[in-house]
Amino acid sequence: MNVGFYRKVLPIFVVEAYLIFTLLVFAVGPVEYFVADPLLFWGFILTYHLSLVAGYSLGIASGPLVSNFSKNRRPRKSSIYWILVISAIIGFLIGHKNLTMSDSLVPYDIFDNLLLGLTDNQGAYASKISRLDDYSGDKVLNVVYLFFGYSRIVLVSFMVYEWDRFGFFKKIVLLVVSVLPVLSGISVGTNKPVFDFAFVFGMSLAIYFLGNYFQKGQFQLRTRVGFILFSAIAFFGAVGYFSFAMQSRGGSADYIVGTSPLGHIRLADSYLPVENLSFAASTWVWLSSYLVQGYYGFSQALLVDFTWTYGVGNSPFLARQVEWITGVNLLDGTFPHKISRIWDEGAQWHSWYSHLASDFHFVGVAFFLALFGFYFARVWKSYCDFHNVFAAYLLPLFGIAFIFTPANNQVFGFIETMSAFLVLSLFWLRSQKSAMFSGNGAYKR
Image 1 (tube, one colour):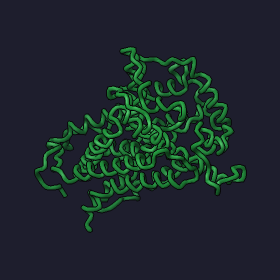
Image 2 (cartoon, rainbow, N blue to C red):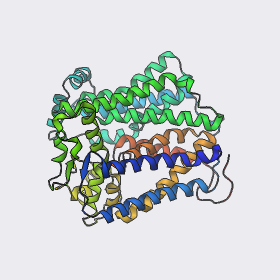
Image 3 (spheres, rainbow, N blue to C red):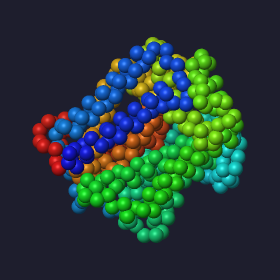
Image 4 (cartoon, rainbow, N blue to C red):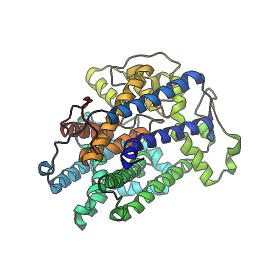
């Protein structure tokens, strides 16, 4: 088999291998889940996987891509640099205010809160929770954030791809501004920004190396040796912080069992009693629960009736904006809300499938995944064929969507990732001359 074949199948193989792994963890992992209707559950799961693979295969096999984003039309890297950096700083200020629920746009106490998050995670997290009832947010700032939030994600990929094009000062600025959201997350004892950075950075680095290999025949690992080490530190640091956060909040693995009022969750006998679990075993129990508990929510959602949420129910952010404008609460019609009595919509994960089904029904999710897989393939082809810069920045977002498929609607459910996906998609579409659904032409090698 030649390199062209591996180039075509590698992305979907990695995605499917990961998703199958999560299903194995759900079925035989350290946390045991009761599924009320196994035939319905596994039937839809199989259908979704087949739809994703079919859509991707069609995208790979269909017509050629031709880029009209030539080198002489690309904006200068220096101008792009400052646009992204300034946008990311503005995005950080608004995002930090929303995350910490602060009254001030200026994070004057970030370092004090950062120290608190590192030394007393439970206190930092409890302080955040205590502000929930009194914080109403700023709708105008949220609208502004929609136009700047994208840069917090894109800047991380930009740093990876363009690192060697800048001098020492600009590199330091890139690094500092890129990790600012991580500091926000730690300051309130929240894991998400830490994992977001680790995943986007790691995937961008992997895509950079693969692009080099498919374009030049070499991974050129030596060009990013420092980043390889940094990526490993970021990932294991995120896992370590996650475990530290869970245990510092006084969380025992017994808590996981208590999340199901129906008694549908228990720990495997080999992980009992929880008091005797090692740090590594306890971390694995918590990680496996966070990784796949959304599948249980999906299994429960299959048992309730469908209420159409007009295309915005999949995203809590979009649904809240619609309610702000129209006064209509669509979140009450979503599947996570309907099963909240037995699987808390605000505290537990609900898989991407459940979120999408609120808009498309469980049958319609299969068609959505086929289209998503098709788009994924087209973006991947444009990156491999032409090293399309927008494709390079889009691919980590596809990765985020797949990583969190068992857990939630990570890309379209949060303003930063949704904004980045939409903005980059618009630029990517503009960069293409080809008719995306054309079956004419050979695959460009």
